[in-house]
Length: 150
Ligand code: CUA
Image (tube, protein in one colour):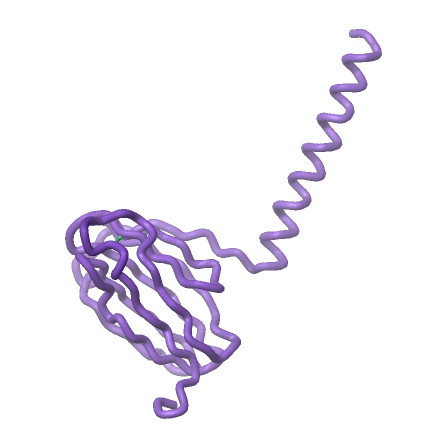
């Protein structure tokens, strides 16, 4: 092995280490929670918002042409939410603006992701997967600390 090869190998090792440290640092800093695919259960496809107390919620969202059910979700500041996502027809997307939530809604599958809403505001939900002629109108909203629904 000549010196040039050794140099390249050394730099490759350094860059890989920087990359890994950056990924781990990102996971830690932004508390990234990777979406998971959980075993299919019919009861998870029924749209509902379950308040477990202490600002802990389970929200079961069903995506369908061309809306989300529930489409308006009211939460208090500090709400910790587990989203369970399913689709009633075709593949849809589910992205919550300003949050690390970006999932696919797949018929016959349940995807789960968790987040915490620490700031009041309106968080739009958009479908980011082309799902037919009404795709661009497919949206929902999460309203955190709405004055009339505390
Ligand atoms: Cu649903 Cu695009």
